[in-house]
Length: 252
Image 1 (tube, rainbow, N blue to C red):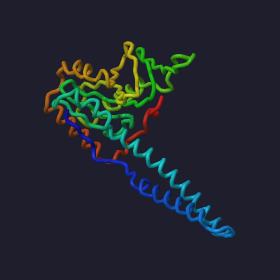
Image 2: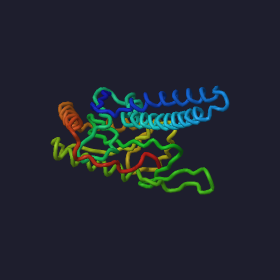
Image 3: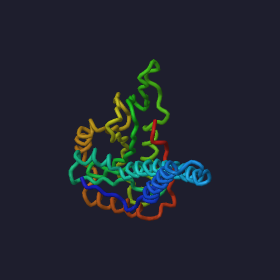
Image 4: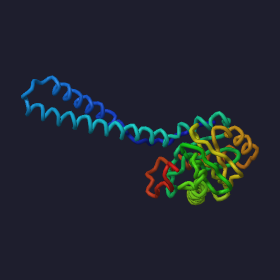
């Protein structure tokens, strides 16, 4: 499978550089404060303030930088690529996190190939979940047992798929292209029990079977695949004035 990442990213370099510097300043102030002789009240007070600020600000920046790095990894879709790449051959193209005008940021990827266009929404939920038709539940592992999820990926993927289809009709001559939504769980800590779901649900366990099932369908020839890929990349590299926010948070 060919993998494409549109040319955009979020920078997290600033907090990653500043966080250790502030921690070093805070630790140094604490060490100097500890070795000062008793009676140096003013210097000790200033050093104590410096240590508190350095350690506090440095710790906060470190947490923020790590969170930003984790979100960037999810945005890049590295785990999604690792899950799908072994399952598809070079007839398929996976575009990770394309940003199309009017399409929610929940769009994690477009899998384009002979079987058509799969509109991917990714969920990285911790725990055990169950989907029945369009109903999603979470296993509390308590007396409450299964409870409804706070968000519904089936509704989310329908919304994203409709938005991609609308964009394609307007901008990519895609009026007759087959668009099918799929919900991807690319992390091992996401356990999903499938009980006749309405939407395609792809996990690390069933990805090869899913790829084999959709690979039997032939709806797009290579030139048409290439034209659609070019249209997506062209739209992703332009400023996205029509972007709208994500349809739901990344947790259940």
